[in-house]
Image (tube, rainbow, N blue to C red; front, side, top):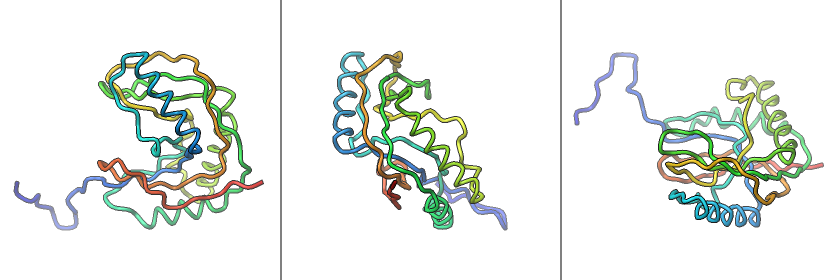
Length: 194
Protein backbone atom coordinates (compact mmCIF):
# COMPACT_ATOMS: atom_id res chain seq x y z
CA UNK A 1 0.00 0.00 0.00
CA UNK A 2 1.53 3.37 -0.94
CA UNK A 3 2.27 5.88 1.79
CA UNK A 4 -0.41 8.54 2.16
CA UNK A 5 0.74 11.87 0.81
CA UNK A 6 0.12 14.98 2.86
CA UNK A 7 -0.26 18.63 2.05
CA UNK A 8 2.37 21.04 3.31
CA UNK A 9 1.57 21.91 6.92
CA UNK A 10 -0.72 18.91 7.46
CA UNK A 11 0.48 15.68 8.98
CA UNK A 12 -1.06 12.36 7.96
CA UNK A 13 -3.56 11.27 10.61
CA UNK A 14 -2.05 8.79 13.03
CA UNK A 15 -4.09 6.06 14.61
CA UNK A 16 -4.50 6.33 18.41
CA UNK A 17 -2.30 3.93 20.35
CA UNK A 18 -2.76 5.20 23.90
CA UNK A 19 -5.83 5.97 26.02
CA UNK A 20 -5.56 7.88 29.27
CA UNK A 21 -8.04 7.69 32.13
CA UNK A 22 -8.35 8.04 35.89
CA UNK A 23 -9.47 4.80 37.54
CA UNK A 24 -10.15 3.05 40.79
CA UNK A 25 -9.10 -0.58 40.98
CA UNK A 26 -10.72 -3.09 43.34
CA UNK A 27 -8.73 -4.75 46.08
CA UNK A 28 -7.21 -8.13 45.13
CA UNK A 29 -9.90 -9.96 47.11
CA UNK A 30 -12.71 -7.95 45.50
CA UNK A 31 -11.22 -8.51 42.02
CA UNK A 32 -11.24 -12.27 42.63
CA UNK A 33 -14.88 -12.13 43.74
CA UNK A 34 -15.75 -9.99 40.69
CA UNK A 35 -14.17 -12.61 38.40
CA UNK A 36 -16.15 -15.38 40.10
CA UNK A 37 -19.38 -13.41 39.72
CA UNK A 38 -18.63 -12.76 36.04
CA UNK A 39 -18.22 -16.50 35.44
CA UNK A 40 -21.46 -17.30 37.29
CA UNK A 41 -23.44 -14.68 35.35
CA UNK A 42 -21.90 -15.80 32.08
CA UNK A 43 -22.97 -19.41 32.66
CA UNK A 44 -26.40 -18.60 34.08
CA UNK A 45 -27.34 -16.29 31.18
CA UNK A 46 -25.69 -18.14 28.27
CA UNK A 47 -23.21 -15.40 27.50
CA UNK A 48 -20.21 -16.28 25.33
CA UNK A 49 -17.90 -13.34 26.06
CA UNK A 50 -14.86 -14.00 28.21
CA UNK A 51 -14.55 -12.10 31.47
CA UNK A 52 -11.88 -9.42 31.51
CA UNK A 53 -8.61 -10.40 33.18
CA UNK A 54 -8.81 -9.83 36.94
CA UNK A 55 -6.12 -7.13 36.85
CA UNK A 56 -8.20 -5.07 34.37
CA UNK A 57 -11.35 -4.75 36.49
CA UNK A 58 -11.73 -1.06 37.35
CA UNK A 59 -14.06 1.90 37.66
CA UNK A 60 -13.28 4.67 35.18
CA UNK A 61 -13.50 8.07 36.86
CA UNK A 62 -12.70 10.28 33.85
CA UNK A 63 -11.66 9.38 30.29
CA UNK A 64 -8.82 11.68 29.22
CA UNK A 65 -8.66 10.96 25.50
CA UNK A 66 -7.07 8.67 22.91
CA UNK A 67 -3.73 9.66 21.41
CA UNK A 68 -1.16 8.56 18.81
CA UNK A 69 1.56 8.05 21.41
CA UNK A 70 1.70 8.98 25.07
CA UNK A 71 1.20 12.78 25.37
CA UNK A 72 3.55 13.82 28.16
CA UNK A 73 2.04 17.31 28.36
CA UNK A 74 -1.43 15.87 29.04
CA UNK A 75 0.00 13.40 31.57
CA UNK A 76 1.75 16.24 33.41
CA UNK A 77 -1.35 18.48 33.40
CA UNK A 78 -3.78 15.85 34.70
CA UNK A 79 -1.25 14.59 37.26
CA UNK A 80 -0.81 18.13 38.60
CA UNK A 81 -4.60 18.51 38.91
CA UNK A 82 -4.94 15.16 40.70
CA UNK A 83 -2.11 15.94 43.10
CA UNK A 84 -4.10 18.78 44.61
CA UNK A 85 -7.08 16.59 45.53
CA UNK A 86 -7.39 15.51 49.16
CA UNK A 87 -10.02 12.95 50.15
CA UNK A 88 -10.42 10.20 52.74
CA UNK A 89 -10.78 6.50 51.85
CA UNK A 90 -14.37 5.40 51.20
CA UNK A 91 -16.42 2.27 50.59
CA UNK A 92 -17.67 1.32 47.12
CA UNK A 93 -20.35 -1.39 47.01
CA UNK A 94 -21.94 -2.76 43.84
CA UNK A 95 -25.21 -4.71 44.12
CA UNK A 96 -26.62 -5.02 40.58
CA UNK A 97 -25.46 -6.51 37.28
CA UNK A 98 -26.78 -5.92 33.78
CA UNK A 99 -25.81 -5.00 30.25
CA UNK A 100 -25.32 -1.53 28.85
CA UNK A 101 -26.55 -1.05 25.29
CA UNK A 102 -23.06 -0.70 23.75
CA UNK A 103 -22.13 -1.30 20.13
CA UNK A 104 -24.11 -3.95 18.20
CA UNK A 105 -22.60 -7.34 19.00
CA UNK A 106 -20.41 -5.88 21.76
CA UNK A 107 -22.56 -5.17 24.81
CA UNK A 108 -20.77 -4.60 28.12
CA UNK A 109 -22.00 -6.59 31.12
CA UNK A 110 -21.36 -4.39 34.15
CA UNK A 111 -21.65 -4.18 37.92
CA UNK A 112 -23.58 -1.15 39.16
CA UNK A 113 -24.66 0.10 42.52
CA UNK A 114 -27.24 2.23 44.24
CA UNK A 115 -26.49 3.87 47.58
CA UNK A 116 -23.23 1.89 47.75
CA UNK A 117 -21.62 4.02 45.04
CA UNK A 118 -22.70 7.45 46.31
CA UNK A 119 -19.30 8.11 47.92
CA UNK A 120 -17.61 7.00 44.69
CA UNK A 121 -19.78 9.41 42.66
CA UNK A 122 -18.95 12.24 45.10
CA UNK A 123 -15.23 11.50 44.72
CA UNK A 124 -15.59 11.41 40.92
CA UNK A 125 -17.23 14.86 41.04
CA UNK A 126 -14.46 16.21 43.31
CA UNK A 127 -11.82 14.97 40.88
CA UNK A 128 -13.80 16.58 38.04
CA UNK A 129 -13.87 19.88 39.95
CA UNK A 130 -10.09 19.72 40.48
CA UNK A 131 -9.66 19.10 36.75
CA UNK A 132 -11.93 22.05 35.85
CA UNK A 133 -10.00 24.31 38.22
CA UNK A 134 -6.80 23.32 36.40
CA UNK A 135 -8.32 24.17 33.00
CA UNK A 136 -8.96 20.53 32.10
CA UNK A 137 -12.76 20.66 32.09
CA UNK A 138 -13.08 19.27 28.56
CA UNK A 139 -12.43 15.80 29.98
CA UNK A 140 -14.91 15.93 32.84
CA UNK A 141 -17.91 13.66 32.33
CA UNK A 142 -20.73 15.35 34.25
CA UNK A 143 -23.14 12.40 34.08
CA UNK A 144 -21.29 9.13 34.42
CA UNK A 145 -22.61 5.89 35.89
CA UNK A 146 -20.04 4.29 38.20
CA UNK A 147 -19.59 0.70 37.04
CA UNK A 148 -17.15 -2.20 36.66
CA UNK A 149 -17.17 -3.89 33.23
CA UNK A 150 -17.14 -7.68 33.58
CA UNK A 151 -17.17 -8.81 29.93
CA UNK A 152 -18.44 -7.94 26.46
CA UNK A 153 -20.99 -10.11 24.67
CA UNK A 154 -23.19 -10.04 21.57
CA UNK A 155 -26.23 -10.50 23.80
CA UNK A 156 -27.41 -8.45 26.73
CA UNK A 157 -28.63 -9.35 30.17
CA UNK A 158 -31.36 -7.43 32.02
CA UNK A 159 -30.32 -5.73 35.23
CA UNK A 160 -30.74 -7.89 38.31
CA UNK A 161 -29.66 -7.76 41.93
CA UNK A 162 -26.49 -9.57 42.96
CA UNK A 163 -24.88 -10.19 46.33
CA UNK A 164 -23.26 -6.89 47.35
CA UNK A 165 -19.62 -6.78 46.36
CA UNK A 166 -17.36 -3.98 47.55
CA UNK A 167 -14.04 -2.77 48.87
CA UNK A 168 -12.46 0.20 50.60
CA UNK A 169 -11.10 2.62 48.01
CA UNK A 170 -7.68 3.78 49.20
CA UNK A 171 -6.18 5.19 46.00
CA UNK A 172 -6.91 6.35 42.47
CA UNK A 173 -4.69 5.84 39.45
CA UNK A 174 -3.79 7.55 36.18
CA UNK A 175 -3.78 4.74 33.62
CA UNK A 176 -2.35 4.38 30.12
CA UNK A 177 -4.39 1.79 28.24
CA UNK A 178 -2.27 0.60 25.34
CA UNK A 179 -4.90 0.19 22.64
CA UNK A 180 -5.02 -3.15 20.87
CA UNK A 181 -2.65 -4.72 23.41
CA UNK A 182 -5.14 -5.16 26.29
CA UNK A 183 -2.63 -3.62 28.70
CA UNK A 184 -3.22 -1.10 31.45
CA UNK A 185 -0.06 0.66 32.62
CA UNK A 186 -0.38 2.72 35.82
CA UNK A 187 1.42 6.05 35.32
CA UNK A 188 0.75 7.59 38.75
CA UNK A 189 -1.07 6.72 41.98
CA UNK A 190 -2.54 8.95 44.67
CA UNK A 191 -3.35 7.68 48.15
CA UNK A 192 -6.57 8.74 49.84
CA UNK A 193 -5.91 9.88 53.39
CA UNK A 194 -8.03 11.14 56.20
